[in-house]
Image (cartoon, rainbow, N blue to C red; front, side, top):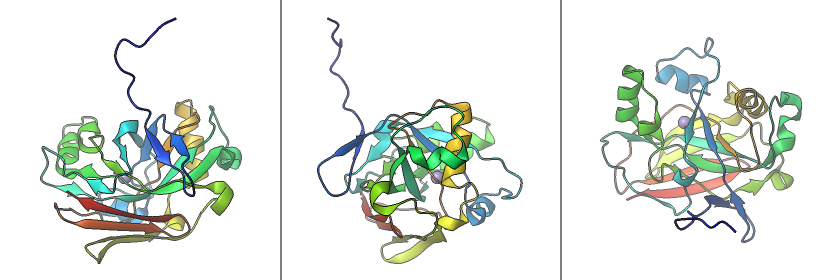
Length: 228
Ligand code: MN
């Protein structure tokens, strides 16, 4: 019988609300520019862009409530997003059946080394250096769709040290959750354990050590994370 030649790395996971169950994470897809006002603040045109995705690493997800300020950056931004967790997958999934694959939802932060992302954009390089660093995706617990349904509207809000930074509504997404699943499944084979970060409303801005970020999505939950 084969054995691993080094200790097996831990399986990245998210806690599920209301018990001790864990959701194992396989892949992390993130959509860029999915709210018109954020697209404009990042210099894009919300009417002309097809969706695009990048990936974080599964072990970038973190539920500790602390976000260590990352190395090699002086401009680290918060992006509050709804995380969508899949319980099944496939290829060429239709938008009409896409929500059948969703296990649940969570409040999440797509923390970004904006200065490094900006350099990468300018040099036409990949975004991982700006996006996919250690503990770059603080997350709250997953709440099952069997409990809350599939939220298509609801206030999205992030405050830092009590001052509101980001506000929006899930109904302002350019590409809706079923459309994102359908689109991704045309390019990748989706599977149980995959999660999708569904984009951020406008108001992204820098944080500093000591800041407390408090995010909420109506009907999904809340998240409090301290920058350390
Ligand atoms: Mn984002």
